[in-house]
Each structure stands twice: as structure tokens, then as C-alpha cells.
Image 1 (spheres, rainbow, N blue to C red):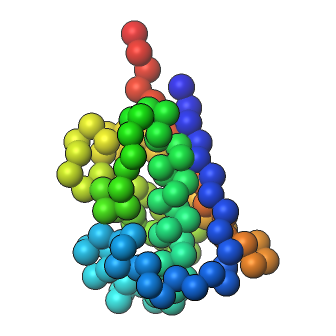
Image 2: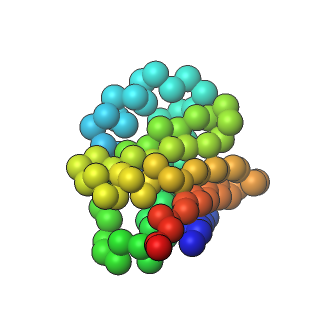
Image 3: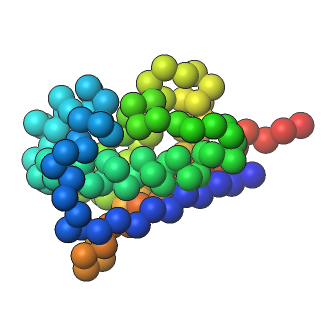
Length: 121
């Protein structure tokens, strides 16, 4: 089975106060090496992308997944991202079967995450 999550956010929303809430410590450290985007842009992409991840995986995990449980690696050049679980091997196995994409269309940021669940015999 395949699952997809989509999220849409405004590019003009104030995100100055949510970075530390939605980003893992490692993501916050990486922000200093991301040249292609500003911290606010990276925060918006992170928020929107994680929301897409959560929407895609919810039918599979049937529980709330916190922002701190998932870490993203964002590639601004290809407008893609990878998601990894921070402390849950089962969740990590699921996320590793997924791929994320984001794009800006006017004043709207759209993220999608597509993952394939393990086939059941």
C-alpha cells in the first residue's frame, strides 16, 4: 500500500518562534550550513514537510508523532527531503521507505511525502 501526505502553508506566516519547537537539536545545528535558504525559510519548509510526513504515516502508526521524533534532511537545490525517526526503529523503517518533495507557488509552500508500507504476506 502507498500513503501520501500533503501540507500547504503560507510563505508569509511568522515562524520566528516555532523553530526550536519543531526542529530537533541536530536540525538546528544544520541550519548554519544551509546556504540556499534563510532560517525562516528552512523553518517553514521543516514545519510543512513534517506535517506532510505525519499525515502520510498516521494511518500506519495510528498515534500522534511529535515534531521532535522526526528529523529531516532538506535539499534546497532539488526541493526534496528525507525523513528519519530519532528514537524509534519501527518508525524509522517506515520513514526510510518514503520520499518528500516541496515547492513554492506564489505565496504558498506545498510539501508532500509519499511512502510505501511494507507488503503483508
